[in-house]
Length: 161
Image (tube, rainbow, N blue to C red; front, side, top):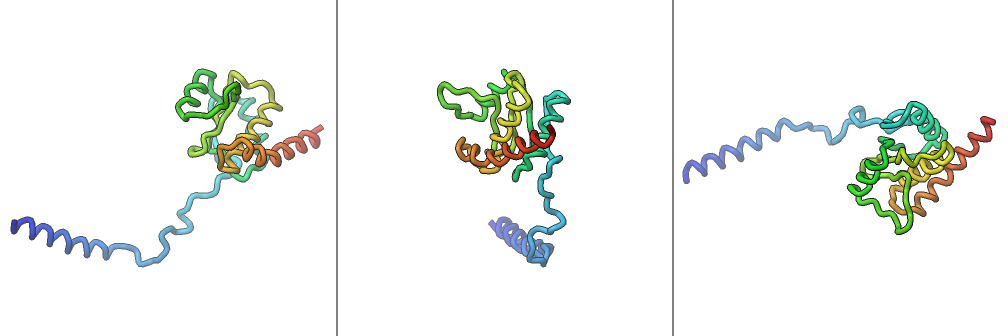
């Protein structure tokens, strides 16, 4: 019993001295130590051909989204289905999707086997970036946010002709 009392007293007093090593600055985070804001080049494109990667990066650069993805992943159909099941993607009955966004990881998954054309890719990526901008899984919120991105894509196509 005396040993327990002495150990408790020892731990309590050493804890008080350990507090003396804390910083006296009231700021919890130093401004220089914070992570920089994501930029147009800070995301990775995985599983894409060089042409697909160049296209996706160019389209995202034109769209200038308010929130950039951290990853854009082109995956084969079987992996897309498995990943959608793992993340419990909700797709209404009778519908299918060629891509989806996982909001917590800010990742956009693209079914590379259902990739149709460059224009459809831009249209769908704008929708997925709309999910990130709205920070919502709701389709109407994503479409509303994607309108501006699609306008920028369309304007870019007109200017390059």
